[in-house]
Image 1 (cartoon, one colour):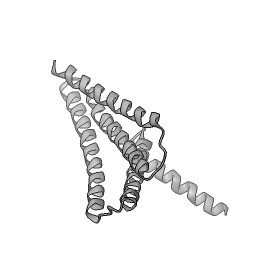
Image 2 (tube, one colour):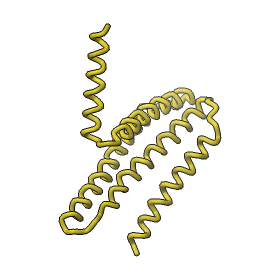
Image 3 (tube, rainbow, N blue to C red):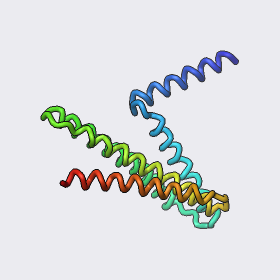
Image 4 (cartoon, helix red, strand yellow):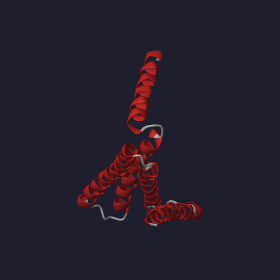
Length: 155
């Protein structure tokens, strides 16, 4: 039993090290987003079965959409990293563009949670109103902040 526990600890440590080296200090946010992707897909399939509207094309579209989210997140972080490096090379501090990636990730995390809650409501789960309203407020706050940053940079 101890050998199994040691192997599991080693695997977990390796996974955390891999995630941390790939995604940085906040690797757990990316893992959480992936878990939310999976849970949203599962609740979406359950919702489709429950409402008798199961469709393999919609399921495939959902998977493609989830992959698309990751592509957009990658692009946002790539743009941020690229512009930050270019700014360093030409002597301009462009560190603020790092927010592009984080705002993109935050927006998608909020949307995934909202989607899961919507699916659960259709499945008959009693979701507290304050939770859905709180997510609406969070989404509006992220949107407002990104609009403010965009407006500030236009001036």
